[in-house]
Length: 407
Image (cartoon, rainbow, N blue to C red; front, top):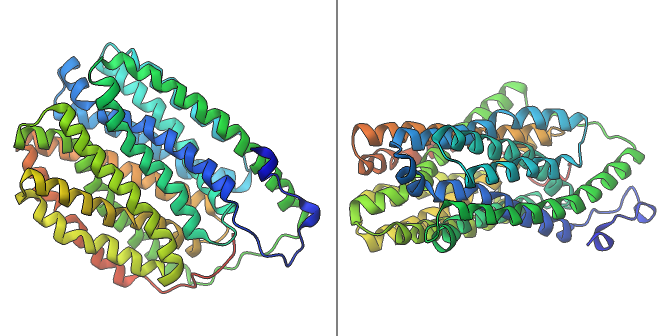
């Protein structure tokens, strides 16, 4: 692998147009797949954990909150630090945290141990996402939306595999079988070691070139207002996603009386649709403008979310697939738009948005779990149906130069 992706500095010229490194993008996408597949196992085995430890919906939400907080709080700090001091080998180290959490979860005997395991997996995620997003941009060759979509689709496809593998491997045989997925973490470490070598060599090439000055083209107030709007959109998107990723299986079981295994297959269908939708947003944003993709993705999904609570089992499955495809196209466009708002701060911006997304997902899981305990699981979907209407604030975003090739 390394022979095909090592740079050749002597062949580069100052005016040479950078090429998209699909080998690196493919490798970082596969790593993202493995990372998020492992993380999604926690969500997928919630019904098993609830039965084994007699958990309330609030405690289920606390598991997600613990994971998401550790995954979110450290990300902007790590991104800010690595913008100034790149750490190529932080990627496999972060996966080591994920591996430790996975093994602890497999052999957990009480609820506090489950929380510690979730925290370790979250810590691994907080290291992985800012640096891997930076790698994707480095390998983009200027096609930033495409690169982020390739990177993101691996993670979303991995998230969709978690419930499927949980249904096939864990549900029939018990929680201890989670330990088998440590092999996926080990494979990810091997792939990330190869990426780290490429990342390190890219840093050497960058240091040998004259350093260009990064120019902020928009007024500071405009940038702050735009980032605030993007964070509102992230709140809308990930609060809604939390309602499905954490409680969709419970909703289907409670409303339609289907089995846990059948419910996990439905969750897989939704998460697979999210993976499919992810690959659309980035390249489409490169072509027509990221603002239009953001607008269509967040606000455009609202008619389907408003219909969902009233649908039959069949149409629930159909609507959640449509929702997954449309809603998923937003994140790559939002992230690249934010990176272009604050040039030269790739790690910090990536860490802020990944971290805020995870934090909103965790907070959403906890809040919605509380709502479900107070009322019913169905009321969660009636309430969340209105969240995508916040997409209207996209109209306030400025039009920026999306064709900038600055890294």
